[in-house]
Length: 161
Image 1: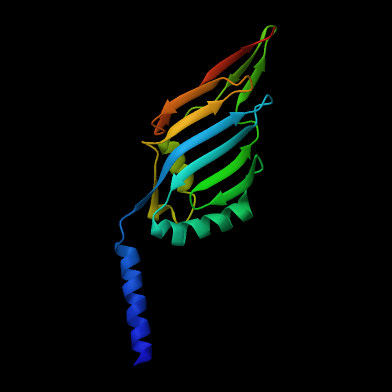
Image 2 (image 1 turned 45 degrees about the vertical axis):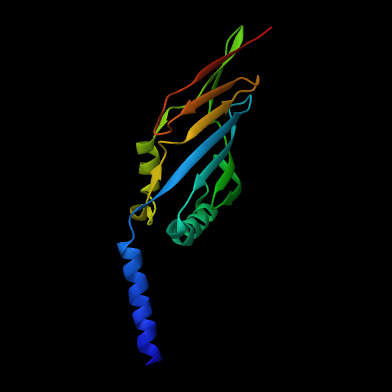
């Protein structure tokens, strides 16, 4: 009898997971601080539902631990925030009178495409539409942007005295 209860519970849990709607990790805010060499410290604040916290978050942790990109250093990660440094994220060009910083454009489709490399991709989508972005340049200038579903490239020039 105990064996049947366990099987029934397992079948119900499996059915619940299969019937659960595709969830969305909601990105609330990206804060990017650009260094003079083009490296960027990034803090991403996001929200996950119970399914993502139970399945996607642990899977993502193990994947990141084993396959962290060479150009990124992850400082911390939790169910609601990640802090990392991305090397050479911003293009830096020096002229005679200025330094020009150019960020890369990105879109929700680009992010979703990256997510599709992982086995849990069909269980989650990224919701970037209501997220905001703050970019801090080395001279303390900031750029703000709303709606992360499509972010243009930013160009910031720092004049030399």
